Image 1 (cartoon, rainbow, N blue to C red):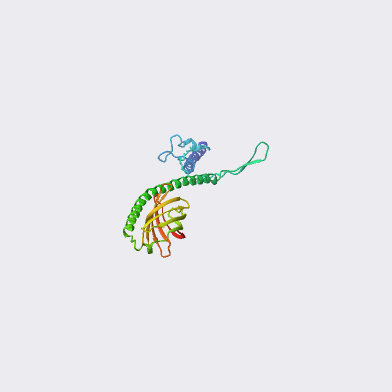
Image 2 (cartoon, rainbow, N blue to C red; image 1 turned 120 degrees about the horizontal axis):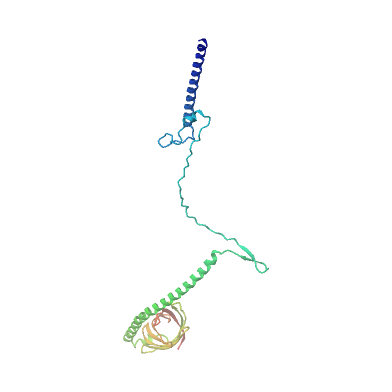
Length: 278
């Protein structure tokens, strides 16, 4: 009886201690589980809870080892960038090569002059050809226009010659007649073909003009026309087959200032001075 009384309190004490240990273990396991949920490496399932495979078991609370949390990998999205266009200038250095055991042969890189000079010479050649064609075209236009001009000038000179013949006064001829002889001068021509002029003029008492002459470039010619008072006009015919219509004014000094137009489309003027009287 006394032994049983003594043994009963000790059994109760053992049971109470065991219960306290279990309660302490459960409390410790809960704290450890809560700490595991707060660990940065812990993985959560969709919805914020644990996945079925990663949920902690009750046996893990009582053991000293824990399963590691699952890891996730994230693939960064691919991005493409378009590089801006760049102009690359390649500068080739001068190089030296040894050929056949001789001295170095220097090969320089291409220079801008290697391309500019041929282009420049080509441009000059083209410009020269075009300039020549333009000059020929201008000459053709001048000749075509010159023929029309000469036709008009020739008609005017012939009309003037008829007027001079009509206005001629034989009674005044001895006083008004210009001096016959050789006249010399220099022409001023619109094609810059200036040349020396020599004319042998004979002023007849009936108002006629006859003679011949020679130009420094155009050569020899014959002439025929009319005079009256201090006015005169004649037509020159050259050996090359062209003509020149001339109108003139006899000045007080005896010189004759003439204007002319040729069938070649060339116009000009000249001052003829008496060199030798006939």
